[in-house]
Length: 102
Image 1 (cartoon, one colour):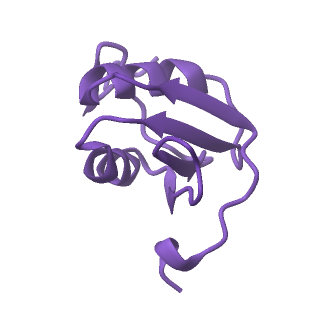
Image 2: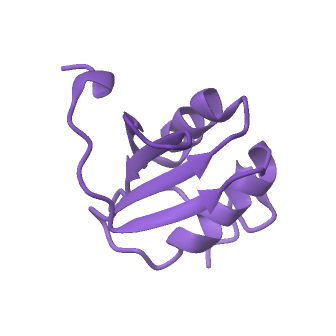
């Protein structure tokens, strides 16, 4: 089954990234999900034109599960599920792995 055809679960956390471009959006997302447990469903409101590409790519890079666009919202929104074994990214560079070991 394609992620785009699945019903999106009710979010545990909603992050409003309205007006943020890619990097600031991902920085906010990274900060907001820090400490969230595996299985947490996160809804990201994102008006950035590249969000439909950047969010699934970031999830692929980190290991989180991209669930797809949230239908019928007033603003564009996307959902993801926190993975138990997600790869960490740098605090100020969300596209880069955090290899600090701590």
